[in-house]
Amino acid sequence: MIRTETLALLRSRWLTIVVFVLVAIIVAAAYVAFSPREYSASTRLVVSASTSSNGSDLAQGGTFAQQQARNYANIATSDVVLQPVVNALDLDMTVAALGRKVSATIPLQTSIITIEVTDSSPERAATIANSVTTSLANAVGSLVPADADGRAPVKTEIVHRATVPSRPSSPNATVALGAGALLGLVAGIAYVIIARRVSSRVRTAGEVRRLAHAPVIGTVREDDPRVRGVITDSTSRSVRAEEFRQIRTNISFLQAGNAHKAFVVTSSVPGEGKSTVSSNLAASLASMGRSVCLVEADLRKPSLAGVLDLEGSVGFTTVLAGEATLDDALQPWGSSGLQVLLSGELPPNPSELLSSEAATEIIAELHERFEVVIVDSPPILPVTDAAILGNLVGGVILVVGLGRVRERELAGTVEALAVAHTPLLGVVTNFAPASAGDVYGYGAPPEPRAAVTAPAAATAETER
Image 1 (cartoon, rainbow, N blue to C red):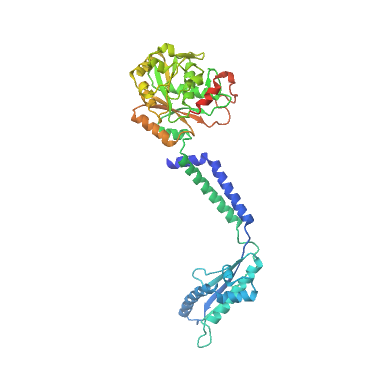
Image 2 (cartoon, rainbow, N blue to C red):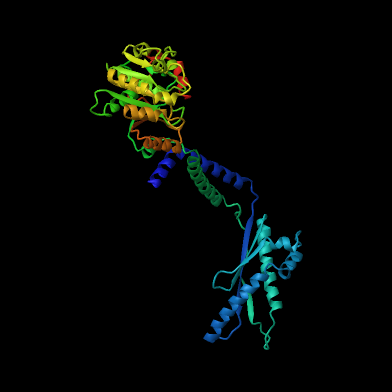
């Protein structure tokens, strides 16, 4: 499961990874372009032992030669070898500086010494390599004493002299660009995963299903700036209208068997668009000819009065206080017969009011009078109002703002509902990224402004 989610995350953020790779390749190319060129020239010197043709002596001599080759390789960068080179070539550098340009290596199980010299000049690199090899051979001859017969126990022979290199050894463009691409890929993947862990925002319907353990009953895309507010035209062919018709169809399967249905619409945190979803869903249900009541039970930061362009001074709290009857507080909206009960004046104790017997009676009466009751409630995490209301009506529809709610917040909401024994009936994902084309309208242009109401007020809801 985790591996599948990671692959899905990487696929969704592939462009970010590609940018990292391209930037890394550009940096590597700049390094190759501006780094000073270095050239390497190498020679090979073989060390052999002076032995008889006896098989045993040859074996011992080979082992002895390998041991001596290792010793001679260690003195290849010493003063005794390099000082004559500095003097002979009249180099404008110290022995220590020359030693940093020279390296001596021995392939495994051999007595061959490879001398490699790196320099900014290819000609000088070859000249120094040959001179160092000659100097090492001379040093070996002077350091190893001859035996009683006047023969040296070991001898050295130059088997390969350095030639002027035609290509720089550093920087290696192929290696640099390949390493840059690989590092960019690793950095891009790490960035995407770490950024996902840090932000932990819910971005896909799959993540919603995994965290909420509830069906996604609909998806609402990000608003087209030309189509905002509450849709009033029941024949609208816009994508937005079709999205709410799909949600309307799906909720008909919720609370199956109940002639009168009621749903609390809420979210985890402010800003997920729950009030816009509530009002559009209620309007879509009413357009079918059903008796629908939209109740604003958000007694802390109500917004439906602005969204629907209604008078907000009389509403739920007014009825709770006994200052008006339910019929007085209900307001018609649109041409489809939708009835709206706004919040009314803000009380100092909203949670206590919503859990009161009077509130229970109002909800019960609305449930009895209307075929569908949609209750817009506050977000769950800041306050407990939605859980209280959800138990009154029999379930909650959760609006999840993709890219706006964090995983821990959505998980906390699900846990809070479970603790309160409030059924989570379904999830509506909001602010989904808009895809190219009009899936439902078959390329039809968005509906004109005349098909919506209160466009300005709906913009304010996205901030809640």
